[in-house]
Image (cartoon, rainbow over all chains, first blue to last red; front, side, top):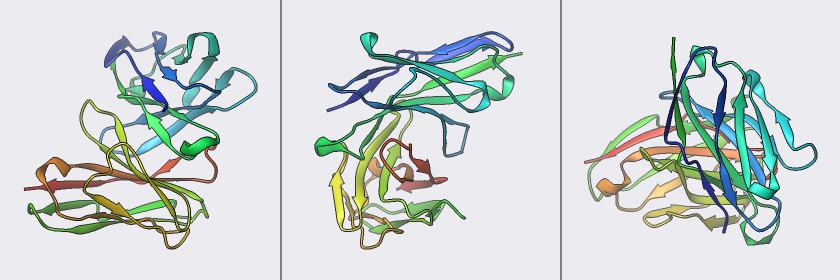
Amino acid sequence: AQSVTQPDIHITVSEGASLELRCNYSYGATPYLFWYVQSPGQGLQLLLKYFSGDTLVQGIKGFEAEFKRSQSSFNLRKPSVHWSDAAEYFCAVGVSGGTSYGKLTFGQGTILTVHP
Amino acid sequence: NAGVTQTPKFQVLKTGQSMTLQCAQDMNHEYMSWYRQDPGMGLRLIHYSVGAGITDQGEVPNGYNVSRSTTEDFPLRLLSAAPSQTSVYFCASSKQEFYGYTFGSGTRLTVV
């Protein structure tokens, strides 16, 4: 079964600083990987996804993520954080084929606080 | 195009009561899922469906039932509510597994 680990429960950065949120997954084959963002009291919004091709993917709101198969990682990055980026971020993994296709597994989330 | 619609938005139940959380999507998505979100635990999959008539269990299915008679609807039934089922419930849908899921706005359920 697939699993996702987000090692950082809470990260604080200053506005304008760079950001990297870590995500590690466990799955035997090439997974589908996603990052979602959730503002307080809201649903989840898809930031970006990877399922094949270029390992550096661009998303909305200036975010990007890099798939590194050798490290089983899919870290989310942003070069300059804005106060509006304060939210909770979730990494998720999905699988292709087998008995678990269609099943999306989430990490525990990383809460991002942005200081002015 | 309404996306994924969940009703109700808020609900308070007494222990032992049953109820159905409604979820409907108008995007002709084959894949639909139910998650519960609890502080510090991320989103945990309750049940999911890859098409009408096909459902499967996720990681926390106990106490919940689902059925998928149409492509559009995927209701979640709580059989006998317990305080441990107090949570925020999200329904989501997707066209294919690699598209990413579109989420509803959630139902906040409190069981007293």
